[in-house]
Structures are given as C-alpha cells and as structure tokens.
Length: 350
Ligand SMILES: [Zn+2]
Ligand SMILES: [Zn+2]
Image 1 (cartoon, protein in one colour):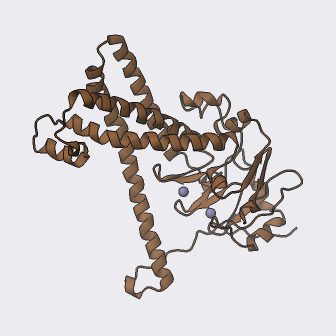
Image 2 (cartoon, helix red, strand yellow):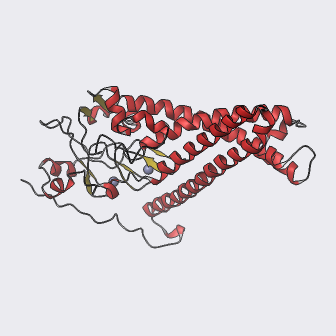
C-alpha cells in the first residue's frame, strides 16, 4: 500500500503590499485578482441588500396601495393578502437558506454520515497517481481515471489548491476559494456556490422568483395604468421618477417611485427565475449538475426520476415547495458516494 501524505496547510499567503509599479508580472496578476475578489464581495453585499429591500418593499406597496386600489371585494382582498405574504416569505426564506447553508467541503466533511476517516488514514493506491497528474480545464482538480472501481464507486480526486482529496463531483471554486461538495455553479446573486447542501433551497428560490416576479410585475403594471399618469416615457426611469418625487412634482409620490423601480426588479426576477428553474428541473431530473452539463461531462443515472429528486430534497420532495423540509426529511445521498451513477470524467476532453 502506498502512503500518501495529506498536506492540510492553507494556500500560500499573499505577498506583502508593494507599489504597483514595482511588482513583478505575476504579482500584478495576483493583485488584480484580489481586487476583483473585493468587487465580487461588494456585489454579494449589494445583492443581499437588494433582495431584502425588494421583497419587503414589494410586499409593503402591495398590501398598502395595490390591494386596496385594485380589489374591492373583502374576501378577494383577504386571500390576495395571504398569497402575497406567503410568496414573499417563501422567496426570502429560500434565498437566505441558499446563502446560509454552506456547501464548502472542508467545513462539512466531518459530517457523521460520511466515512471519511478510513479514506483519509488509508488512502487507496490510486490517490498517488492522481496527485501527480495534470489539471483539468475546469480548474484545480487533478485528472481522474476513466473507469469506476470494481465496486461501482466513483473515485476521489485531488485538489491542488486546497491540497486535499475530494469526493467525486466536488470541484474547486475560485471565487469561494474552496472545494464545493457536488458543485453546481457559483451564483453571483446569492454570492455563494450552489452545491450539495443548498441546491434544494436554490431550486425553490428560483421557483418562487418566477411567481414573485411575474405576479408582482402584472399587478404593478395594472396599478400604474390606473393611478399614474406620467408626462413622458422618461418618468419610467427610476432615477427620473426619484428626482420628480424629491422636487415635489405633482402626481408623483414615493410609492410610485418604488413601483417603477419594482418593474425592473420584478422583470429581472421572473426572467432569471424561469431560466434557473427550468435548468435545475432538467439537471435534478437527470441527476446531473450544471457544472457537468457545461463541461460536457457524461453522467448516466440508473435511478428513477423520484430517486433523483429525493437525492436533492429528501423524502416527500414536493413538500419543499410549500416549506423548507430540511429538519424532517434529509437528503437521500451523503454528497460523497453516488449510487447508481456513472460519470465519465474524461468525456470533456475533445
Ligand atoms: Zn479546492
Ligand atoms: Zn463559488
């Protein structure tokens, strides 16, 4: 049995601050990368504020202005109120669960359901060959064998950035700077990677984005048609509308400014929701990830449609669309071993 040393040290420290002109070429590249990671961080904060702002103000404007303005019947008003609160809450809860559930493999690998210890103390011989092989085009995972083992298990690979052995379907994310368990993609809106532990929330978040976006857009348009008479198309530019409100223009109140801003946010929400919901439906049904789809890695699942959904959501998976069911129904997989799945990693080498 070959012995392999597993280096747990962190990636190298960044060089000390130096004036830009005096830096070597590689240092300049590194410093630019650091700057871009700062802007990604800022964008992450911006998105979090934006989503919280939109869901709360959209609900507020709907309850206070749109509902009394468009609906007269008491029962209709009541049920519309319930629906609006439900949709906005679901949307926000699933968004925050997507953000807060870490898919970082280094943090989650001590999970008791995972038999990592044996693997780490007695790494199989094939690990050694992985560590010395070339990297894949996807980044920092060393090449893996074409075939699965005799027992049907998918092989572990080695991440040369984190210096750890990682389970199949785990991939390194340069933005999160860590390895992500069952990496799907990096979501800029959530500011985190979508992977094994938060895909269930991301999927439901996309589902509610469609409803919050499209219904919100429809009612906003209806309300503006009835209660707003703009001077020109320019009044539909949020900055112009805001300026008109500040300067005290007649017929322009703050909730109209909010509604005009919502028009764009709701449209964006509905469009992105549609794209990601349909994408995730296709991926989850076939038990593949967006990563594997983009990299043209061939994935064959012997499992049924139902099993593939339970792998992401746990039992009674459809209930997740009514409320997050994490505590009651755990996912069927452990994120490490993948039963009934065949992955041809080398299929992306054209
Ligand atoms: Zn890594
Ligand atoms: Zn990421």
